[in-house]
Image 1: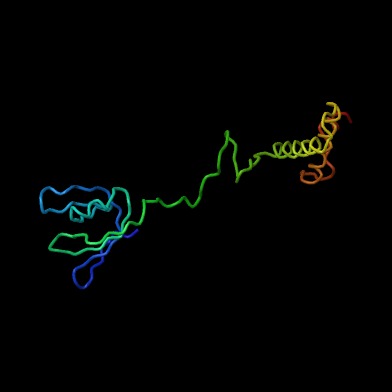
Image 2: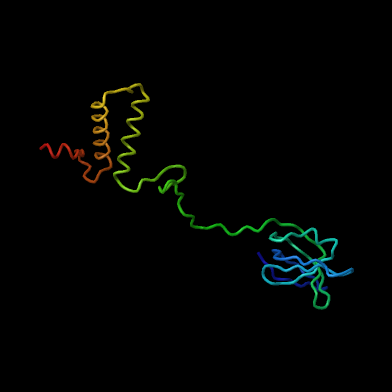
Length: 167
């Protein structure tokens, strides 16, 4: 936002300001003092001082009389909004990284676990629920092998650690 004053031919000014402080008039026939966040001092008549609030942004116009910048017109722009961070940090939920509304796994083991759990959940939802523990373990091994065949480093069919130790 520009708080620099621009002068016209008739010693008028136009500016966009952010009000930092308002000092009421010190007596009858005197103006209220407006301090902007960049340190400029402007003056406004008491009947218009109610149009301004600290922390808000305004477009103002006025006249320059000797060393005083007297505000004659005020237009409220809105509350001050700091610039948004162009590089927002990823969301955190329970210490885990989130992208959008989904958890983003940090390691390949977590990716496999999510894959296996999702497929087992689908099998249960399709009516294969209440399977004995041995069958669920076997189905989990099958899903893990599929993961390793599709996405694993070897991508050869992926054997389980238990299968390797049995050989």
